[in-house]
Image 1 (cartoon, one colour):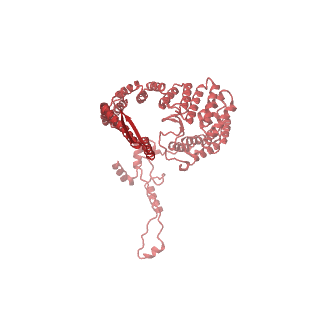
Image 2: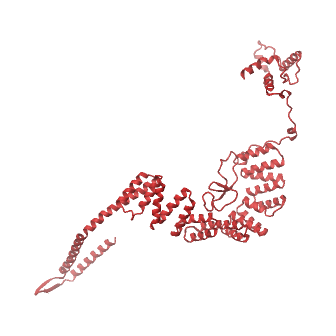
Image 3: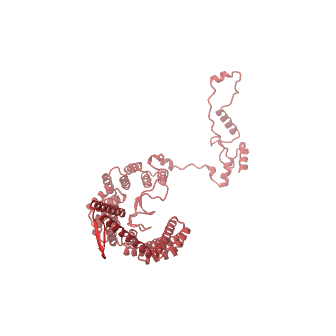
Length: 554
């Protein structure tokens, strides 16, 4: 574009110059070696321009002829390089797609067209192809060669770091990350790996310094740096809690200033104040944290702040904590537990049922089972709530990478990731049919303890060996099904068939009386409602056929 503009300006300048000379005609006289040469001014200007153009064209031709061998060599070299880069690009795409055969083929072609010492990406392509084919030893050798080259040191160290993590060699991965941080502190993966290594070793001071450096280097955003710093300060506060309560309190309070809703920091601050016997400040910190984020572990520290308090005092503190954030699930559960400890069963039941209406959980169902066991002792209701707990969703817990912990930890024990624990329900089992309290079946009625205490009478025929009992069962007649009395035919039906009177049939009562008279005539007493006694020595002659049939079936 610039050249075109310069050419246009040059043409305009020549045109303007010739027009200016045309408006001002004149002659030029030149005496050279005794000869006089005369011509017009405009013709002389044209000859001068043509001479300059001819000189430039001749110079270009001579320069082209002189440099033509080099230009031809450079042309073929550029063509070869372009083919090599095309093969390298195709090989990288094939490696990314998982086509090891094509990647290896393109790598060999790129080696033939490009110089390996001038194009380090060939080593990367070979390493990727080796990893796809499962030849990890060869891939590590390629990465080591790249790590020794200053131009590809970062790439080689990252490849070695990932290979060490794949093999579970944490110490080797840590060393590679440290080397990468020394060479390039701005690398996010190296900085994160070095930070996690310091956290796993419990070197919180160094970790805090690294977070500040990463924030300055723009590796971490402002919010990420605040969160990581709060996590590290809380971890250091927990470590200082036993030996340095004041330092633990300062770290925990600074973490709370960075993240006001961070529950582990609030718990650490409350415990630090309690270590210093400052109950008022501990209660203030825990109450403020409870208002922002109600958590059962905050309630546990708050209720048991004073050692040796009675169950009634703990119930009062639980009710006070519940009042700070009404209509809260965790507050209802905490009050229900405290009321159960204080033997306030009606209050415990009321709070637990209110919590169950808000959300069905395993812990709430177990709490109701404990209340039933302590108050009524009704095992039917206890089993009812135990079965409900088996089908209810599990209670939240601290979870990181599938690992469930009873307390918060700064680093995941599985992957070593910083600030990995979250307060949520575990996913180790599928939730049951219970989703809310409305889906629960009705409670069974309370047992009659007096009736339950009376033992059932055991028939005399059950006393004896198993063979005797089986013989008695075979001798026992089958119970007759209860016949449902049909209503007598209505008058209209009787009028329809007057010429066909029904024969008289015996009623059920008449049959019973007749059978009873026959049995009494045979001398058999009937103490068991019309059946012979369950005595293996007494058999009913009328039922011998039925007993023999049963024996054949068995």
